[in-house]
Each structure stands twice: as structure tokens, then as C-alpha cells.
Amino acid sequence: MKEQETNSPTLHLQRQQLLLRMEYDYEKEEFRRQTEAMGVARKVKRGMCWYPVTAGRSYYNSLNQLAMEFTRTEDTDIEHNFEYGRPVCFFRQTLEGKIEYLKTQGTVSYADDTRMVVIMPGAGAILEVQGVERLGIQLYFDETSYRTMFEALEDTLRAKGNRLAELRDLLVGTGVPGFRQLYPVRFPWLNTTQEAAVNRVLCARDVAIVHGPPGTGKTTTLVEAIYETLHREPQVLVCAQSNTAVDWISEKLVDRGVNVLRIGNPTRVNDKMLSFTYERRFENHPSYPELWSIRKELRRLSGQSRRGTYAERESLRNRMSRLRDRATALEVQINTDLLDGAHVIASTLVSSNHRVLAGRRFGTLFIDEAAQALEAACWIAIRKADRVILAGDHCQLPPTIKCHEAARGGLERTLMEHVAERKPQAVSLLTVQYRMNEAIMRFSSQWFYRGRLEAAPEVRHRGILDWDTPITWVDTTGRDFKEQFVGETFGRINKDEADLLLQELERYIRRIGGGRILDERIDFGIISPYKAQVQYLRGRIKASAALRPYRDLLTVNTVDGFQGQERDVVFISLVRANDEGQIGFLQDLRRMNVAMTRARMKLVILGEAETLASHPFYRRLLEHIRETGG
Image (cartoon, rainbow, N blue to C red):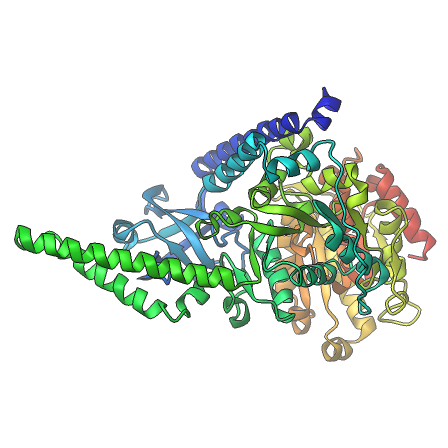
């Protein structure tokens, strides 16, 4: 059955539907359980709730959506999960501590550390929320994203006699990807594997994969491929799973002078990013002032529509009808101008289903960080394209899946991984990395990339101190450090190991010299796979007088939070220490690959060798570090 499923696009996609339904049911039930059972304080700590919040002004934004601002002044240092497009609900907490949910639900338009803008369903919702004491905002179950993914899978299954059907049969069936014969384009500023990858993209008729291990310049290569494709096509669609990834590739394209239209609000908000958003471009269009004044007049007239004689009301309705027709015509004109004028339309995979893109087709779809995207999400965008370019690294972080059964059943396996394994002729592996000292890179290269990576000459021996060992393991065996379980979401904590990490960090800072660190802006990353350990480390750093001068050079986060980032020095706290040799979450070796490859010049790993060496990966890693003198 498995072999049949592998070769049959229909069976493959039906399996995807089944697994996605499992994830949907699990996440919905988990949301219901958390909503009913979890207190406000725990929800705030987990980043799924703001409490208390103050309701601010309400207004109509440039897209004629009713928006409302909310601010929070407490727990502002806790990272939250609110971002553009996510649904929210509102509640009030009674004096007795009971949570009462309001009827109103909204959608996040923008959120930073202290301020959130929510698109509200109507004036009644504004009235319900205004003036509520002890008001809170909580993430709501995201029905829309799932509905969009299910629709995309259904459309792909039903496709017949069109390009989507061809791409389906090729990507998840037995079809062979086609390539044109083109004279190679030379890119003297790229290395040979990057240049080959760009040319492979240009030659691909159906699909190409840019496989970019850590530090190999995957984004640089992808930007070049997009830029070069735009010499041959008027417009392309660029997507990624997360808003952050879309922002990153969009910013790099803007730096190359590409006209990008960003659908959805950026996560990293600055004037440069905002200037290419759909909303900002919409309100800067020459026809927008007329549209705005018509909408304002319509809102004024709608308040009078029930007054006066029948003839007066009929006259008013006719006038409003003419104004609405004019507003619709202006909106269509503005949208056409914006979309036709952009070289790149950039959005998340789910947002590629946005109403303004309805009916649009693209010669090429680029999906960045494709190894972190659910397959179903990729099909949302693929429906609009004639060919697909996937970029990422399936040896790094997989998609986030909450239902373990669905993950084990294959939902974690991405479209990029599937195509890379079954259509190797479509894959271009980037092999020269520009981030890490060779000793830091070597183990990752051997374990994940069959030893094919090489360090560029300029980084091969990079270091901070003379005679320093680039990679070190601080073994906590025999110190009687023990892990503690603190809950499903937060995982485990090992306070003794965290305290030791900070001692080692302070010692290394003294070796380098505080003045030099501040002058040269030497930065540090502190990583743990467990949220509880991250929060404990953040608290200890905040309270440390010795580390205060360097606080803006210290970043503490989970492995997921460090994806795509790099630091001069990285400390990793592995946490696990038990008599049974249980390593749990650390068995996801792709996460460890991400953690180890963030460091440019110095990597320090803390962990109990006795516990971790029960797994062949960590046993071999320990041997490698000892061989290199660490």
C-alpha cells in the first residue's frame, strides 16, 4: 500500500487530507481544552493572551476595514504569538477571577510588543469591547488557514486537463521534471554552486530546488534567481510559510531595486518595509483621496437612510448606489494599477489566497523556507503558477505539527523533501558556507550533508581568541544536575545547568575583554530546545549585574527562534539529565543541526554526556569535539 501511495498522486493527496484532518481536530480540541482549563496568567506566559489591555481609538483603515487599537503595559517582555492574519477573541475577567468571553471576534492587522491593531467585524463589536474593565485578548482557533489548505488539496485532487493537474502528477507522482537547454548565464559575484543553482532555476520547465545548508547563501542565490527570472517574465509570486520569512526575502529584493508588493503586514515594521505593503501603496495611489471621501460620504448617508419621506429615502438610496458603483470602480482601478505594476507579489502561502489575487496567474512561484511549510499550504500557491521553485533545507527545522500521530504519519514530511528525494535531478545543493569556522561546520557537514560542505577561505579559521578551541562541550556528568518537567508546552528545565552556562559565559566574556566586546560589537546567542530553560535564562540574565553592559549583545531563544540567524558566539543548553538515558525532544536531530550552525567563531555545548551518549548522534558529536580538542 505504501509503495502504491508513493506512486499515486491521488492516494498521496488523500493521505495528506487525512493527516491534516487529524492535526485540525487535535489543535481544535487542544484550543478548547486550554480555553476552558488554563488560567489567564498561564495563557499570557505562553504568548497566546494579552491581559490586561486597554481599548484605544477605532477607525476605518485604507482598505475600509474597521480597525481598533489595543495596548498592554504588563508582561511586555514575554514573547507573544500574535501576528498579521491571526484570529482573536475577547474576554473580561471578573473580580472573582472568572473568565467571561465576549461575542466579538477579530483578526490581527498588526502587533508589536505593546500595541495591537485588530480588524473588527462591525460597529457593534466596537461598542461591546469599549469600556470593558479587565479586558483581555486571546488567540482564537485559526479556522480560516485550515479551510484554505483543505480547499487547496481538494482543488489539486480534482484538477483535470490543466497545469495544476500536470504539476500534481509531476511533483507527487512519477512524472519527470523537464529542463530547457539554455546557454549558461555567468554571475561572477556568485560561487560555482550558486551560479549552477540559478541556471538550473532558469532552465526548469516544472520544478527546481535550491537546497541551502546553513551559511551557504541560499537567500543570495534565490534573490539572484528571482531577479534573473524577471528578465524573462513580467511578474512572479514569492511566498514563504511565515511573515518573517516573507519580510526577509522581500527586503533583499527591494535592496536590488525590485518593485515588490507585499500582501499582508510585515512583522519587522519600519518605513522601508511598510512602503511596499499593499495597504501603504493603496493609500498612496492618486485615486485614493477620491475613494476615501466617497466612503466617508457613504458612512454619513447611511446614518440618514431611515429618515425623511419615501421619495427622499428613495433619492438617497439612488445616490448611495451611484457612490458605491464609483467606489467599486476606483477600488478595481487602484488594485489593477498596484498588481500590474509590481514585479514581485510577496505573501505567506495562506495569504496567496487573498481576494486581491483572485484569478491571477504567475509564470513562476518561488517558495522560500519550503522545508518548513506544510505540503497543503504549498498547494494553495501552486494553484496559481505554471512552475515552482522550492528553496530551503529539509535537514533543518520541519513544520510545526502539534499532533504527534499526524507527524509520525507523514504530515511532517514536506513537499520539498518529497520532491528532493524522488526527483534528484531537480536539486541544486549549495556547498560553500560563509558563516562558520571549519571545525564548527565539519560535524554538521558529515552527518547531514554527506561531507559535501566546505568553508570559504575567509571563514575557515575565523576565531575571536588566539589558540582558542572553536567547539567545546562542557560535560555536566557527575555534578548531580537533574532536569525537571514543567508542562507540555514549556518542556523541561535544568536550573543548575543554566547557572553553569552563565558562569561559563561570564568567564568567556572576561577572556575576550569587556571593552573589546563593546567596541567590536561581538554578539552572543544562548539557545535551548526547551522554552522553560529559555525563560529561566532570560530571567537570570536580566538580574545579572555582571552581564548588564552586554545585554543588547545577548539573545536568548529556542532553536525555532534562532532559525535563519547567526551569532559570533553560541552557547547551547541541552537540559536533559536522567538515569534512563531519555533525551525526548532532542531526538529531532534537525533542531540540533540548526542550533549548532548558528555560531560563527565559537560554539559551547552544555549537557550531561552520560545521558546524551545513549543516542548515536550525540555520541559521535562528543567524539568529534574531543578529536578537535574541545
